[in-house]
Image (cartoon, rainbow, N blue to C red; front, side):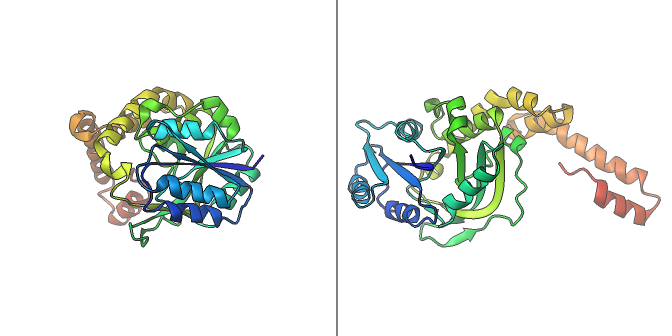
Amino acid sequence: MPKVSIVLPVYNGERFLEQSLDSILNQTFSDWELVIVNDCSKDKTPKIADQYAQKDGRIRVIHNKVNKKLPASLNVGFAQTTGEYLTWTSDDNIAKTNWLDTLVKYLDEHPNADMVSASMERINEDGSIFDLPPAKDDRKVIDLAYRCNVGAAFMYRRSIADIVGEYDTNTFCAEDYDYWCRIALAGELHYLADNIYSYRINSASLTATQQPRILQKKSDIQKKYRTAFIDKFNMGYIKRAILSYLSVERKWSPMFIVFDTYKFILRQATNILLFWNTTLRKRVFQSLTIKL
């Protein structure tokens, strides 16, 4: 039984698949299994996947008989795994050599964490880096209520997966966001600032080609779990207002008018109260102004 199980769902991924697989083979942590789920690819993906399985016994390939899409392919792959810790990656992304080592070490040292999300850099199609993560990680679990802040470098325990169940096939294009929300609500999600993964901006990816559908699915997920986040994190009136403000398209919601008016009045009131002392005003305004 391997410590870590990795699933790699792929559809027509011949362009970058070898780079992704090589990055897994180059991991400093070696106690893993990889299940590649070929979702009826029409290019050289099946051949590449089978070649890697032949040269490394830790790799297996499942060839779907019909195109199942990403969430169903993840379910197919994870159903064939046995590891204590679970993760998945994409055919066009590259894992740094310490990807697994960092995540496994964190979960081993933090038994209360059901899932951990690390930082990642973004690369172009040619592999050049164009966006680095901030040195300080200020992500918070509560922010999942209105945006997906997990990223592509993550690992979670099989025990929490047994609780939340499979990926929801009805959330195709936002299945990861839905799953992270479920884990955050059922257990504990932690964050790491370590940059251990390269996320490729690929013009042929689902992220690039399915934006309208992704936005709609994310909006549906926010509405679905809104009450659960409010209850778990004991959100007061102000936090609930902020959640409503950030979870919707501003142009369609009257909430932004009320909220912008509130911010304007609050800031002006601060200035009026402190107008008599310029030095004090600047000092207090810089330290106490509420930034929303």
